[in-house]
Image (cartoon, rainbow, N blue to C red):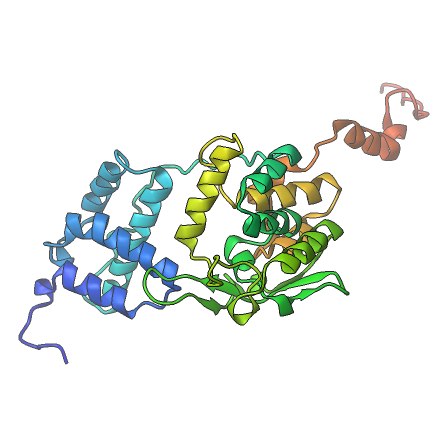
Length: 323
């Protein structure tokens, strides 16, 4: 029970922010990210304040200062953590209004996706350790996310129907054991067609490497689940060996898959379903520039329907005489 003798003005930001964080329901990796932004960016700025002291101008000044050291996308994450805290304080009646409302953020410029080439994908596959080469083929040939690949088990691969079922992902918390959890979102549950090249790669992998715990296809040499940070180390080393620019992410293989579908004429809805996006809008936000814009087809389509309206092709009625 709160102390009725304590003034609302006395509620400290730091204590409330920590209670807010403890009450949130996050996936482990998301919780680690939020905690990091709270500890490194929000509390150092406002930890000594009372909740009621924060004004929109204070938040705007903080956003501007964060923009001097953080990328715009990171500023947005830090801001959303602060805004979540103050929204909860408003809901609890501790502040009259969330001071984050109306605050302007630096614009996040999304760089257009530039898909890897087939040669680059093959170079990455060859540069990976033998027990992880098939995961490159799997991601490039099905578009599965990192956790969906590392969490794939033998019973989710139907070689006869040539389908991969995605209904779990490998969760690797900062502390504690890795485990199989639900996918990123409801739309992430899906059945993805498995091309012959992926089936062949997985068969060859299984012939050489025993599945791990729970039937995991991809494991460490000791048969344990592959933690995200460890995979990252292996991946970055492979990028260097492959002679590719530093910063190439495993996620680029998902972009590669999407670009292949678009190149072969698949619709937005098909690409959305294969990737497990929540909406076609999300798909278009990322890949719209990859769909062909054929001006000749557009012109031909319009001319085919409206060609009779061209000047001189219609018989015009006689003009009425002037009166």
